[in-house]
Image (cartoon, rainbow, N blue to C red; front, top):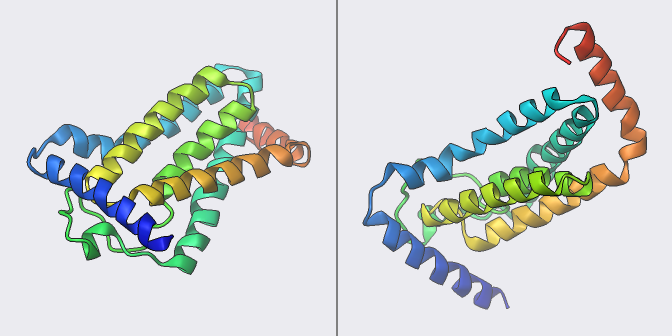
Length: 189
């Protein structure tokens, strides 16, 4: 089973990477590396959109924090899978430090926000972040930074994180209200 997964990873990664390595393009580098920065912008806009949206933005932020620096980081250190450009002979098209590859931190954060929006009933916003996540994930694989299963692992971590934050929404309500109250005092809400 592991051999089949590795062959699947290698086949997709090699074909995408060889295509994109022939076309040195700023656009796919931007999509792989910098498009993720639109997510904080989405959360800030949502924060200032309305009163109920503040809690939705906080819920999405908590989901991303649980997914990326906590769950993905723990899994990454336990599994310790090398990056594709380190071992598989693909060309590194964007710079990335050689740390763990599985699961994808980018996918974990993006899809945690996406799932959180979905669980909160913001289906159109969930769809928009899903599209952003798919684009970023595709180009993270194409540039040799991740294997396809790293992305799938990130999606799995994201689903667990968003589900847990949604599951504990009632106890977290006090935390949301406290943060909103503090930021109102600072005139940031």
